[in-house]
Length: 628
Ligand code: NFE
Ligand code: MG
Image (cartoon, rainbow, N blue to C red; front, side, top):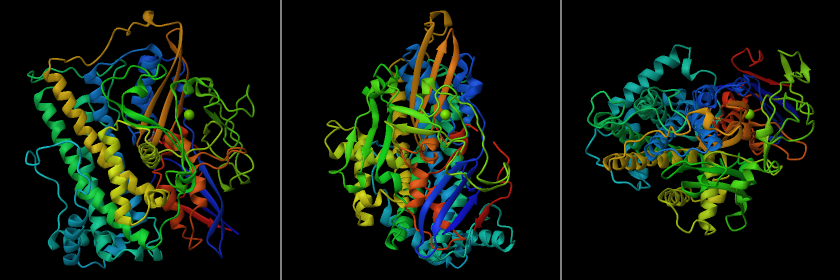
């Protein structure tokens, strides 16, 4: 048995260490540990602040899923103070959320995860003419496999198509060659380019994908234009409790939102739809299909057993969570829990997530059994987020020094992440969870009047099942499935942006220009004590912010974050979290080049900044792989 350590895991956000115990003869991972290695304590800096400022501070948890924390925080405070936001504000927030989700997924696939599957070194062996031909075939085969629900004028803007000329691919290959020959791989550094799995793809696929990596470095900026127009900037755009801070005046040249600026957003949304339809979806299906054909169908882990989602995209307004209104008007009803999806949709069990569950201390809570925290007044207990405590208790590693670890202490504490639970159980969150939930609800007849988003999701799943020639319960419970679904979801989000943009324009044309409800702005109108929760489907999964307000100030603030759900440490009763389970469901071919471990962990798009809201001195080297 070998213990293999990767620290830090690179091409993710933040500081993550993983350790696996590997049976070298079988390649089986017998045990796996996931450890968040840095602490920031952002929940604590919220105490005693004005709740109207909460979104601005807490949004700084993360600049990758920027806006996710602001939106969740706004909802938490608006839930506590019982504020209903105007339609325009709801449409604008949804457009911004949709753009952010696409941009985040594009960055994940091309810039953080793609090099686990494709190699710049292999790209050098490609024939540029054959690559151009392949690009055309891929566009033909996977072109717009799923039409969006909204019409848009394809001639209105210059279209974004992948280039399919020999000259283009030759120029890209020369660019890549210069980087590789310099011996300083820079953006392409720190990978095992000689790993045999890279031979699964022909050199031309490598060249096409690496060319698109470089293309998307430039293009991803265009996706979040809506943040700049409506929120002043990206990352961390501006909001206001009660709605948006951008006034609307269609014919005023200087208004934050006018005809001209709306046209800029429209252009950005159309570009986004093109980037997803012509680059992201075809690339991901072509690459995924080749890997699946070579038997890449492991890495499912907890997705096979239990997933959870909260649902998102209120159709016309947001007017509270705990009062039940949030879950009454959602475009994406991915709320609920599905168990045993890997046994097929009929055998799978669905549990509803009810508004009253939010205040039940036994439904959603967090434990710290293996986390570097303590609950001084509730030792050994799991705490509901409204009663949550963030008190650091760093105990160091099992072997090594506090700042130079040899091995984590799996019997004791070993991570800066808490362990979130649903009814005392672990659950995976994320795009894959959302897709499993919507698909299961649709097939079980639990969504009698499905929205276009829900129908589109089922159509996508069925189309991909045909491409891969595998049942949904098979491919959707693998690491390839986790990565593929993120691309499908980017397509849905691209159209969601368009959908809410059209609703916004229509509403403004009807004469409604309200963007904020300021009736509860004055703290003297607030109750002495109140609590709220904001739910949000962030790119990496179900996010919740929990606020307690006393005498006009925040008295407790807790964020239960997607990466915390997935990367959390184990629990004596509940078992392993999603990262650990997925690693244990993945075979490793070469112990000192554990590419499969990086792949499966990165298939979750880790964001440790979000998960730990947290900093320590470990992991000074760029990447350490040790085996003993
Ligand atoms: Ni920093 Fe985040 C997302 C949130 S983390 S990326 O998506 O919330 O899991
Ligand atoms: Mg937290």
